Length: 432
Image (cartoon, rainbow, N blue to C red):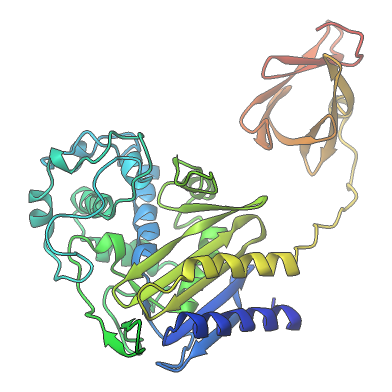
């Protein structure tokens, strides 16, 4: 669905102003809604942006590396709390876990030793591992948030050792091809934007090298287009179950560590988390010499913003979040329409509906679309699905995962409901 004209104009103005103020040669951002690219805003002429023009995605590559790891976890090939040495022995940091590495909670140092890997020719996995020892631990695990590119180089090595397939081939086979991301590639493929550093005083451009980062590729190697990155954003809003289970992606979006003192940012399993008021966005920023990229997704509304610029240091991640908030504020999603039930529940279910009480607190149960919906004090809402006779499992809300059991008297009449040991009766005067 296209943006409203006034929203599109607002987005176009913000992008044009950002390009002028930030002095980037080429800037493009796209708004994704309901799985499609709804609007593209572009500015700059060096080169003129296009939806099929490649830029470097940088650390957004990590979100795909994390997806590969979670695929193997779901297939039973590893567990998140496995130590690294179980799958990639001999590193000297083998006590660190897969979960800690994915969530930047391992404490391992940010970069591998040697020249700045993003701008230097990459090394092979054996050479990378030879430079990793116990001295690379900057903090004890879970002591603090400590972003680490090296962690993702190690995760890439783990993937290669477990599958016998190099990271780039594994990614193509298991993610890029199934999702139709044909313009997302390991190396730049024409047409692509050259990347620059803009001189601070006289505005001239210095073209940056386009490196093959070798064993560090899982941390930031990939190239993509605004169209392909929009498809990836749509996947992160609502995944294709043939690639990754929805519940696994939701797990990836749960915080492993808070990343700032104001508690507005965090990191899940390969995904950054950003709080904007009452909304929480997921995604990742990216940078490589000459390039920056943004990916920010509001999963509840299946709305996202993706973007690229071809100058190092341009603040595109903040711009992406600002654009997403602008769209959501200007065009909030309409609520789903209420539809009447086609039939009343059977007698055994109908008697569960109505008001129940615990310690003066009301619980209202109603029947909706083959589920029990529970309102506590009219505020907290949870939905339950049947799991057996008189047994229901919470699937959303505060009681997600908890059990609702129906308690009956000798005649079979429902006299109470037990939710995780909190017993609700029909009268506030009854003591459970």
